[in-house]
Structure formats: structure tokens, C-alpha cells
Image (cartoon, rainbow, N blue to C red):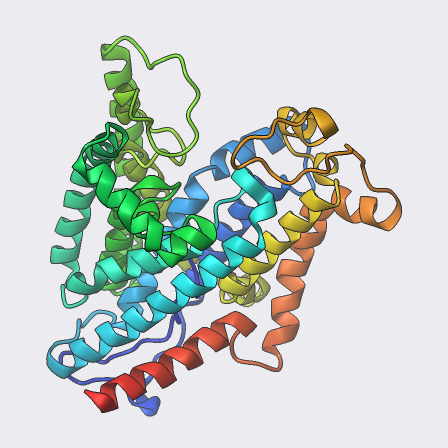
Length: 438
């Protein structure tokens, strides 16, 4: 996603360690613009689509669902490659230093993500904070940091083919009361992440909304892309073409397989494939984390990245506000989560153009089901008035404007966003301290 990792390169080549200041290369503005596209998709899902109504709103929301997550995750991998040498993966002491920096960043994201998930627990099932999952993704990429494009691409394909199926099998064993169930229960009983916000080791690996067992494939694919020369027009054309072919093929093959087996089970799923319905592994449903969903949405993410890189070359000057917003994705993500929790708590969720079933649920008041994960809608069913009602009603538009204007103003004074700077400076200090001790 994001500037969850700093887009500045971290090493110049094998064994050379951190890049000297005079040798630094500039940010790829197109990557920041792609980050903004991912942020915009996130806003569409959680707040509603700004400035449009009717069928266009539905189409944009449907397109954003799942694909913004894939783009976030792919871009995280791109940034990891930039942190570890770009086209030249590190080796020797440089590789060890890169892994330390990534590991420290991963732990910080876990801490920030768990804290944000706890602080925004009022959102219930409407929002799963993705930041702690990023921390787990980063930890799992450590063995792959020294690989070049070919090795990373092979690892990504293998992870996409095996990961979702392995996740399904392991989740089935956990659900069936096998010895693995006892292991999960024992770990969860002492896991601080699980106890605080249901973001423990097994939640992040297997059981929650964006399990690393499935989504690691997109991070590895992003790392493979980040090892390429993204300033090359030829590379961009290849990325866009490969992404388009992979996406179309994935969706078509998925549709064919589903039709071949006589259709999908008559249930609605949201998130990972239920262990009771393995047939959904053949589908490409948004957020399901199936092989076909990863390939389909990941292919579209490649197309979007290629387009954004090209746009940055021909119209980068006019797109600077979007690039500034993309460079502060971690800050904007945290602020949007807090804003969403506030809208729910004050009772204004039904005003912002959300789907009708959710709007009706938010105004049920005392009839609201008392179920796990239920958002903290007001139990008296009240709806705000005045300024609060105005803000809730136009939250999609207001937050989009804020997400573009605030970064532009902030970047006039500071190099990084607030959370981005805090994470980067913490990584610099902690990794330096750890390196001196070793």
C-alpha cells in the first residue's frame, strides 16, 4: 500500500549497504500516483463514491472492491524492492542490513495496526484494518529480499497457486478440532495482538480478512516488479500487457470452471472462502483471496501501475497533488479509519450514500442484533442533525478533498507525512542501534 515503506531506495547494489546521499535517485512519481488510486478505491468502499450517484456509483464501488486491496498490496512489494536495492538486490552485509530495516518496519506496522484496530473497533465488520497484515507480509518476505526479478516472479506464482489452497486446508483443520485447533487456542490465549484486537499471529496468517497465506503472492509480485527498471517505457508496456492478459485469463478461466462444476454454493461470502464451501475456491470474488481473485485483481493492479507511471511522465506536473496524497497513504489510511469510526458512533453512517441494506442496519436502534463484529451503531437509532449531519452526508466528498489538499500543504513544510516520518525515523534509529550491537 503505500508509503508504509519509504519509496526511497535503500541500497545501491550487492553488499554496498545504504546508498550514499549523493547517489540517491528520486521518487517514482507514478508509484505515488498509483498509491493514490489505491487510497481512492479504499474511500469508495468505506465512505461511498464521491460526486457521483446512480449506476456510475455502483460500477465504481464494484470495481474498487478487492482491487484497491490488491493494488495496495502489490505496491507494498514494489516499495520493499526499492528499500532493498531496486534493480540490484543486496548481498552480504547489505542484505543483512536490508532485512533488519524491513523487520523493524514490520514490527512497527504491527504495533501501529493493532493500536489503530483497537481504536476503531466501533467500525466492526465494516472495516478490517490492513496495517497489521502488512507487518506480517513484510516479515514473510525476509527470505526473498536477496532475489532478483526471476526468482521473485517464480515465488509469486508458486505462492498464488499454493497459498489459497493451503490456507483453506489449514483453516479446515482448525475448524474440525484437530490438534492444530489446540495449538491455535493456546497461542491465542497469550498472543497480545489477538487479545487486544483479534490481530494475533494466526489471525494475520490464516484466519482473518487478508491472510498472509494468500496475499503474500501479491507482495512478492510487487517485489519482482520493483526490481525492474520502472523508468523504461518498454518495461511499462510489458507490465501493462502482462497484467491485462493475466487478469482476463484469470476471470475467464474462473467463470469456465464455475460453470463446469455447476455453479457456486448458494451462499454469500465476504472475505476468505468458508471451509464449508470449497467450491468458492474456483471463484474470483472480491476479498476472497483465491488464486483466481489474486491473479485477476493483481493483473489489474499491474495495468494501473503501468498507466500511472506513463501519466507521471506526460502529466506529472498536473498530478502532483495526487502524488503527494499517495506519498502519505499511511497517514490518510489511519485518518480515514478514525473518521469512519466517528461517523458510525455519531449515527451518521446511513447519510453518506452507503448501500441500502447497511443504511437500514445502522438505523435499527434497539432492534440491532447483538452479534460479534457488529458496528457500534447508536442503540437508540438516532440520526445527527446540523453540522454533524452535513459532514456525515458529504463525508465521501469532504474526505477526498481533504486527502488531496492536506498532503499538498503538509509537504510544503515537511518531507514526509506525520506517520510516515515517525515510522521512517524509528526504523532508522532502531535498525542503526541493532546493527551497532551486532
